[in-house]
Image 1: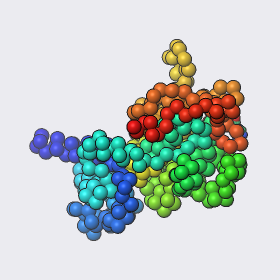
Image 2: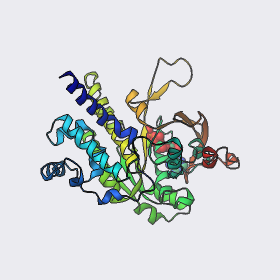
Image 3: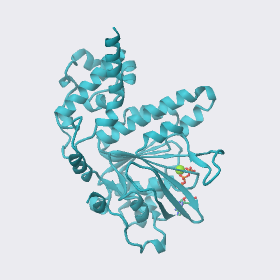
Image 4: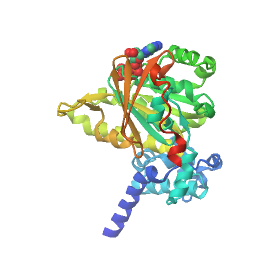
Length: 367
Ligand SMILES: Nc1ncnc2c1ncn2[C@@H]1O[C@H](COP(=O)(O)OP(=O)(O)OP(=O)(O)O)[C@@H](O)[C@H]1O
Ligand SMILES: [Mg+2]
């Protein structure tokens, strides 16, 4: 009895955590997952397939990025059978070479990282801080006080993402999830023009979704895989990730619920970034932390849940006319600062910095 319970618990633990650890899209594969059907998954017959469809899970990829807790509720099944379905979906994707095997050697991992895509932020120094721009297969968080340039970076990324990869774009469309009502097509138009891009082409490439409450945001994230496929987006922006939850779950008694909801959104985002090979950019606010005696008394909102979920965290602050970005958390970037500005081109280099040569390039890093 004890053995059986621990086995199920193990399975559940695996199904909740595996996704972040082992799901990575093989960049060399051209979406063979599109040919796979839910019924191809071992152990899933027509009845379960029907239930899954009713819950909005129509592809093997959809199932592979779901969490066991969520799925159990949606299809009214036990957590362990939900976990088993998810694992079977992941196995099918691995067997079809869409996902990496559980273990790969480090040289193969490095080879895969080389083919990861990067998108410029519009500022060379900010790109240098990010070692070449924002990455696909990662969640990048920009946090900072009001006016620090978070939304400006998002708008600039939108204009650049549509550009070819040789111009450090992603040659793709963008999904912009606007929770604060601050997306401005006029600003995107201005940035595109100032950079010499075709503004109509850029404006047509950005799908904007205005979100009004936290449940709406959760629903959008739930179906994000489908939107990514339908809209062929390689960049997803959520500006901002926490404001709605922060406003709606403000009482002390609701904190645990809020953190749990945010946690589930963020883990889904990580899985999506890896499985669909997309760059996900989120913005976050700051909260003052009066216990800080030295330095800047502000820290990112959202506590540990957010801190552990983003792959990279960049802190932005105003410095006169300019902005300073600081890499706060990254598995491999050095801790460093970058000064940039915001002008009609969106995020841009400060005039005298424009002449400074590049310190670190993508090639150096991979040598
Ligand atoms: N067209 C423009 N030309 C020059 N600077 C601009 C332009 N548009 C916006 N800015 C600058 O960007 C600032 C606003 O930055 P942004 O909207 O990115 O703030 P934010 O970090 O998103 O703040 P919030 O937390 O309030 O959302 C303005 O205060 C202004 O300095
Ligand atoms: Mg903003």
